[in-house]
Amino acid sequence: MNLTKDKNARKFLYLMLSIVVIFVTVVCLVINNRNNQIISGATIGETDKVQEEQQVTEKHTEKETENVTEKKEDKKPETTITPQTTKQQVTAVASGTIDNPTLITIDENNWHLTLVNSGYRIPEDYKPDLVYVCGSSERLDKKVAEHYEAMFDAASKDGVYLTPCSGYRDYELQKRNYNNKIAYYESLGYSKKDAAVKAATIIMPPGSSEHNLGYAMDIVCVDEWFEDTDEFQWLMANAADYGFILRYPKDKQDITKVTYEPWHWRYVGVEAAKEMKASGQVMEEYLGAN
Ligand SMILES: [Zn+2]
Image (cartoon, rainbow, N blue to C red):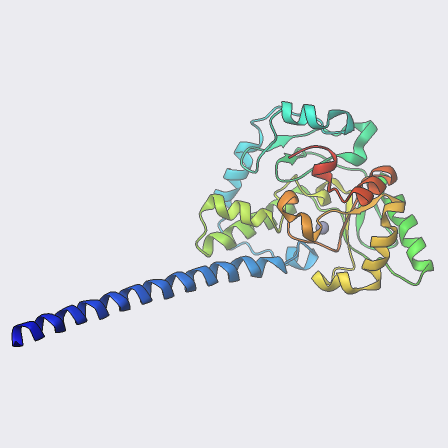
């Protein structure tokens, strides 16, 4: 009798132990998953604006990450991505990747459609012809500045001020910001490769930012709630008439690989801007580049 009782008691104990182990495992998995969500969620609100650039600190170990991004940049032959070199040629040179980007040259006739992203980059020594815009301390490529000023003037007449907040950035600054972001994600436990990909969703690798080209302006710079402002509404309604597009829309993050940036407006020319606005395409889709 006692033996059976003992056996039953032991069985019951094992059963309880198993339940506890399963419960603890499930709890750990849930917590882990939640932490990952918090990490990625925290990135969405972050920006690539001036404020962030100023937080650049030297304490991070930049050297290792610099090697990763720099060494690989020289591997591919230079290519040009323009309307004539859409789908066919882009795929012909094998689309660049974040690890192995394609270096591009700018086609003078179609400069406004130059595509840069983490897979397509301008060379380190690229130097645009820059001018200050709207009496601010921000600069744009000279060819873009006149269009920005025309847009700024038109908006001002409607009582809306498209304050230039962050225009051209040089390659070195972009590199520092990007490497700091990589170091940040590595400190959170990401592998070097994953940290580089994660960092690129917020701060573009050097040479792949439209700010390095001098073709884009961050306007007003008030973070994601910029979309609630009159300035944003005005831009959504009118920017295409001046050749500017919302480059990183909320619903195309899977294609641009960049988080939503309502403040970032890129010049592509009036014709392309209107076509992209009408079709809802982002540059990658418009140019047939993946
Ligand atoms: Zn920007």
